[in-house]
Amino acid sequence: MFGSRETATTVDASPAQLADRTPVPPPRPGAADRSGPPAARRDAHRDAYFDNAKYLAIVLVAVGHAWEPLRPDSRTVTALYTFVYAFHMPAFIVVSGYFSRTFDASPARIRRLVTGVAVPYVVFEVAYTLFTRWSDHAPDREISLLDPLYLTWFLAALFIWRLTTPIWRLVRWPLPVALAVAMLASLASSIGSDLDLQRVLQFLPYFVLGLCLRPEHFSLLRRRSVRLCAVPAFAAALAVAYWSVPFLGYRWFFHKESAEQLGAPAWYGPVMTLATFGCSLVLVACFLAWVPGRRTWFTGLGAGTLYGYLLHGFLAQGAKPAHWYDPAWMHGPLGAVTVTLVAAVAVTLLCTPPVRRVFRFVTEPRMEWAFRAREGRAVQDGRRNAAGVLPGSP
Image (tube, rainbow, N blue to C red; front, side, top):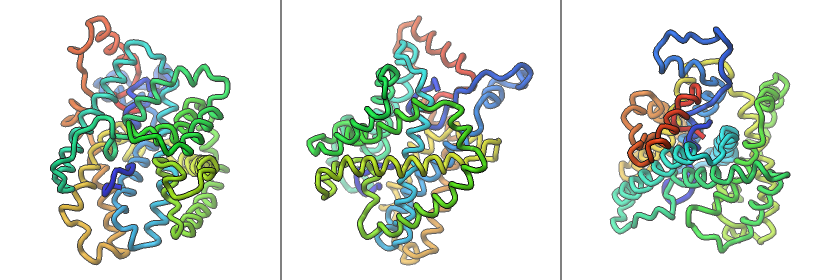
């Protein structure tokens, strides 16, 4: 997606990071060892299931971007690309909404929204614009905070979705209303690129669905029967994705254009909105069903997926001027396997603690100086009270 402005397309923590904070119920007495260092105690309170889901989802995001330059040469790669795009961002957004349920627009949470979402959005929007001036040979490209570039659309969307959370908690039928909004947006070609509103509105139902979910819903997904059903569902989705390649069906899963902008009659918009929502919902359920609930070697990386999400775009964008895809073998099966492995390893490294320490000042800035003293203390208290919640995940 890095040859254009298409999507990349990751609580009580900042909604801006679908990968860094997983608030969980307080541990039972004696369930965790409180004698260790604070970081160790914090990790002990995290929910391994959601950290695993975040890590696996961010790997799929990075791999999807790595496949982008190979799509024109391979129907198989395009089918896999379509399959992954059908659920990786919806999965991020559903989990983001799930951990946004307690957002109440209190001063402390508004300030966390600013420091955890708005500030990283501004920083990375500027950084990506400057970087693409070099990578795309576009020295005149303007910095525009209203036109999200590459991955930053997700931060803009999360900021808006989080602010609307109190409204969805009051509405009697939040999900049908959100679906109606998305369907109407697919009809409106007049919606401009400001803050990528087309994506904000068309992806809205996934966020609202997350707000409606409860822990018991995730428990149902992890039943053995659901896991077994997920296998044929995934297989069928892959088959349909392969069949749809000649029709460029993957563009509907970007949710960034109206039906008419996609070259279809206007009435296709609402129909495809419902169809893609149903398809993505099934695949998200299948994905979450197969996420391991125990601690694994990658569980700890789930706390750093915001970093992997925001930083891997520089590698993807830099691949073109670096001529990584120029060799002919890169456009064959060996090349597809190679870029898949390289992308998975690269984003994994970007989620590690050393990288998080280096870039924390821009992705999780404290900024006590920007707020009144009492409100600054409220933010600090909120951090301490969110047991195991690391700054930065929706």
